[in-house]
Amino acid sequence: MKGLFKKLGTGMVMGLALLASQGASAQTAFKVQVYPGNITSLFAYMGVELGYYKKHGLDVELVNISTGPQANAALAGGSVDVIMTTPDNMLLFKSRGFDPVAVMGNAKEPVMRLVGHPAKTSVAPGADYKTAMQSLKGKTVGVYGLGSAAHRYVQLLARDAGLKPDELKYTGVSGGGQSLAGLQTGSMDAVTEVFASVIMIEQLGQGKLLLDCATQECPAWATETGRMSQAWWTTRSFLEKNPAAMQAYIKAHREIDQWIRDPANRDALVAALKKIYPVPQGLEADTYFKAVAEKVPGYFTVATYPKAIADTQAIMLETGELKTPVDTAAMVWDQAAAD
Image 1 (cartoon, rainbow, N blue to C red):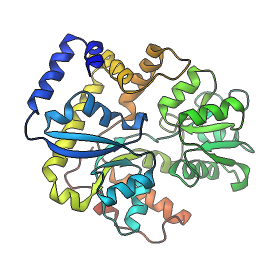
Image 2 (image 1 turned 45 degrees about the vertical axis):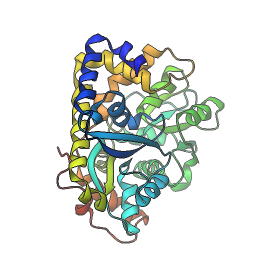
Image 3 (image 1 turned 60 degrees about the horizontal axis):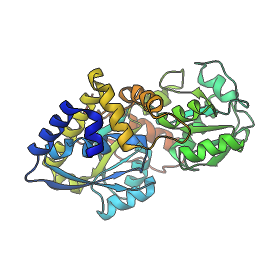
Image 4 (image 1 turned 90 degrees about the horizontal axis):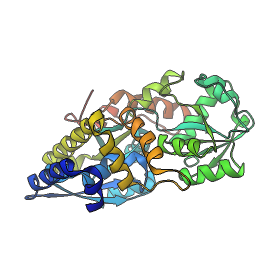
């Protein structure tokens, strides 16, 4: 933390000290899952690093878990209290007899963007999804796990763009490093990636953005499900036993959300990003993290959007991933952060 204090400056240090002192007593232990080193877990990292959890009486332990199924198992077993994941993962979890509840949103844009190999793909900037997907005909796309939300996302985009199922090949990746390597070696023609990894790939000159459904024309299902592409979830039993702690958790994230949106905090946000995440090899830290900071306010949210869960279920029933519908109305806390 001392390094972070130096970067944020004297005024910010005093503010952080105040946050810490306000929550110094009666701390409630709370275990929160994060995807190690992933930008999608930013609010949890900032809640610890900037003292927001302590301010609201929470002693939060961040637990590194790399995949959705592992996070589900940890939540079911009680080794974590809150996880951050996609609605499709929680729909499958509920269909297996568990009772997950979304307490807060995390991302208000589709999680993944498509990035193409600079020499193997070419579409005009801002092209619609049909043009982007048609440019990938016969090519190999890296997705975050075969059978994952990212895999389904690309398959559905390809289908709606008029491609046949066998006209795209897929290979699994587990993060930005593998995606970058796949583009560099030519084993992949395009990859699905979160926005920070897209920035890394573009700044290294190893790829260019093909499709971002937050800014380019895409099917309605992509836009609607993207409005809550990730959320923070707990179990109904934990929620009923700890409603005050969950409200404190929401309040902490609301303050983080307000803080990142204040232009006056942009330099401090860049400094916090530098503290939390390593700079990708070959990139200059200021250039990279300033670009990431510019995208942060547009990506993150605290609001829930129940329709995203219902729309995701409709897709999964269509694809056969869900055999019978579940009660999606019960999957959002009635005291959750909302639009």
